[in-house]
Image (cartoon, rainbow over all chains, first blue to last red; front, top):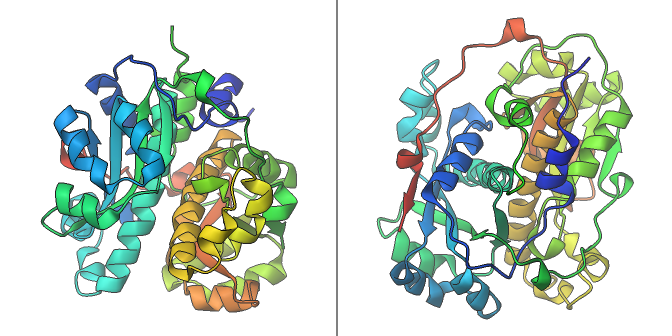
Length: 196
Length: 196
């Protein structure tokens, strides 16, 4: 008998989870954010490169630094969310490969190939962002992911050294179900997939 | 009491799952692939755009078409895997937005902005690839994701119309634990994250 996932957990992670725009006042503890990271970091990345970097914007001062970078439609919900995660990619991820992938000289595959390094950082940082989003749901939090913001402004404010690049944002908290819209349709298998 | 995930399921999806390179002869049914898609498709994408497209390469003839595009180190394990999924992004995803995101004229945000459309297709197609990978594990399958291949060759062979672009591959089957290496280290919270 194969091991398969618990159906209630699949509801929590996939089937019943929603993108939230309204938030209750209930705070989000550091402990829950750490618990979600400890799950998400186990997800696979190319050559175990783990390029995702996350800034959790929580203090009012940090929220105000984020605010000018947000698309108009994302300001109110982001200011109201207990925490906003900036999911970013470390363009110099390869400097950690001697420790993360000790089987080979993986650093040499990337260090002098900037286009491969950038593509690898972005693809794998995005995969890790998705693992993290599902991990947040797994620990009982609600998410509101967004790409409506000015990455240059976020990077200047939060990653001024120019190596880490913002990718997308996730508002995190306990969602207010009253603010939800009806769920939008999803593509069927035969619209998105084929078997050859 | 918050709803949180079942611990055994978190082991299955995150903590005990491994990237497999050896495969048993046991086949993978269409039904399981469809079940995984039905979970993964519920994951969030920007404006519900759902750009991921998947080709499941299963027949010997299709495997032979994929083979010349693979990096040398990925040939044997991919030829041996019961199924190899090509995770790709549809660059013309916006043509489905009138149905997928009926609240606004979202198609107009992308149709004349090719750089935004390409970035949106790639980011969200990658997020969906990660949702799909975890969904495959949820239905009891093992994964071997890879980015070592020539995307131009895969696209010419499987997406000749030039609109859909390959992103990464996932070998799918029932992994042979005897072929696993010890697990490589992961970054701690304080190495990858900060709270502001």
